[in-house]
Image (cartoon, rainbow, N blue to C red):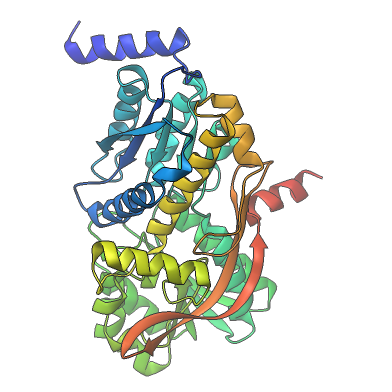
Length: 401
């Protein structure tokens, strides 16, 4: 038996024997943080890391007296479900963490889900947005979002302004969900979808896909990609092909004009419209304080993106669960607490966790890229909805009736 097979056998045996996140008497709580610290997704991992570290620095006094957090960080190297599964196993069995968080990528969250269920380890997703994963993962919750929460109302809004649309999404589960939900909303409003392209997830060349869209002459593109450098690359293709100058509007989820990448996109981003749950430019008092703290810690020229907020809110929910249990973590009590969790102090605005699905119930804002003080910013124009549940799960309920 080779070393890898032996290790895998031992892990499976340990899980089968019921290695669980039990309440502990010690005052140190071990939290596993799985994120992307290397590879093409390192920019997203950096956002998660910044949000976690900033929260912990500013909120140590929110833990019960004598309780400390030990953060055990692991690098999944990007959208690599095999790596994510392996390091989650190690965190549970070897490091004996009581809770896991982080997780940028949907495929990685899906790989971790069975381990969370079998070992009864609570998992709070800070970013991964695939809608269906939580259905069979009773110890998982999220403070991020699902793509349908923004894509569906984007389709409804777009149908009031445009007749013909073309969708362009990254070819993995969240992209497929975004495409389907926008299409449903747009068609319900009387719009026509001229075509749809799914762009390879790894090392994409956006130009040929955007050229195909330009040739079709839609009124608007609906786009989704996994943020970070891909957002900037897709915007560059749009600009290089002068699509803004032939009256093809650019619309999407907030991933296509992330706050941390916006400054490098140039004036072609002006007028890009998105539906999303967060903008660094929002004038909510809680957000102003949050952005000021972020800039003080990391630099005046840096803006927090939505992944920072997902991490910040996740840590707030984790700390609140620890307080509710007087300094311990029990798996079932933690998940039960999250099912009732509400926040009125998040930078994104008030939100809650859906007790039935453990998904977030988010506000969604219509935003447009404008110049504010000479710098590009996602300006919130209106609140499309103050609290939207994941539409995919709501449709599932309706379809079963």
